[in-house]
Image (tube, rainbow, N blue to C red; front, top):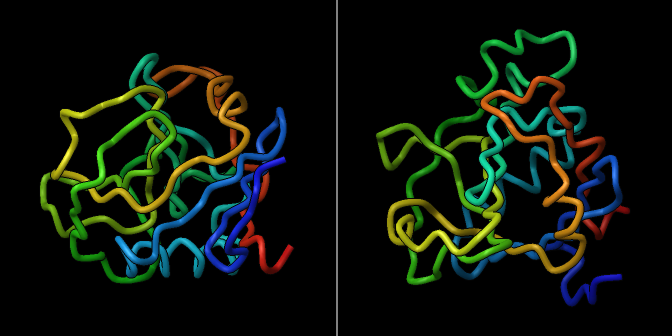
Length: 166
């Protein structure tokens, strides 16, 4: 079990294999942290698939518009939430294994609800994508996510909750 220091800034993501515990970084990326907690509390991430999972790179999810069962899976990865896009919150934090990064288009200020978890140290992303969390428990469950762009049988986030609410 992960050592949760700040339940208000910790995410519990339930995957098919078990719980992934993510420590959010409000001091580094306050707006991204706030958005993730808001969407988690709304239940927006529950049931959303991992639509882009590249071996040795990362697992991307969070398209609350297209990534749910009954949604248009072909479109997964092209949508966001009904909330405004977020400004980039770049920092000196590296994109190391287990870090959470904000997915976006070519516009640095276009992150919305999508995010990725790095499978390995992806330092070529440093300073280009907002880092706003890190996996502190359950990385083995992230490692087990089905690969593909999109995966033939994609895995989903069963539930995503703020630890303070669990």
